[in-house]
Amino acid sequence: MGQAAEHWQTLEVPEAGFSVSLPDAPKVSEPKSLIGETSRNYIVEMGESAYLVSYTIYPPERVRSLDARALLDAVRDAAVQDVGGRLTSERRFNLGAAEARELVIAGGDGLVYKARLYVQGERIYRTIVDGPPGFDGSAAATRFLDSFRIEPP
Image (cartoon, rainbow, N blue to C red; front, side, top):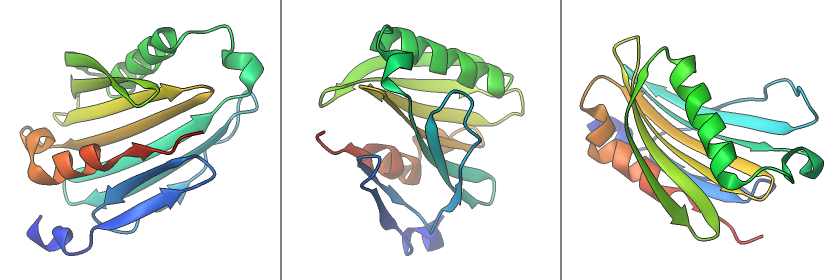
């Protein structure tokens, strides 16, 4: 991972209102819209580890009746199911006006996933690192997760 540290760069996404530091240039994908939402994923894969930041902006009428905790619960449950894993820890916190959760998931694939999920208005942000056991507590994983910023609306 020492070599990766030489390539750290800040990704700023003004249209989604966030910035984050990544260890290399990310690959970008745009999942197909199911209900009129806008989504984008940014991923950097480095050997056995990966860094992912994504956002989804929902149509206001789709999320207006839901509270942030219900959205975070749904995103958490989907994340655990997606990796066929089990939740090993969960912590609630706030980042500015955004409600947030930090999760650690033991994946069914033997990897450990550490995720921070944020809800602000109609936006959901996800920052996730995955890798072999122990990577979730590494300096690189912490640098990535701690660098995430949401710009004021």
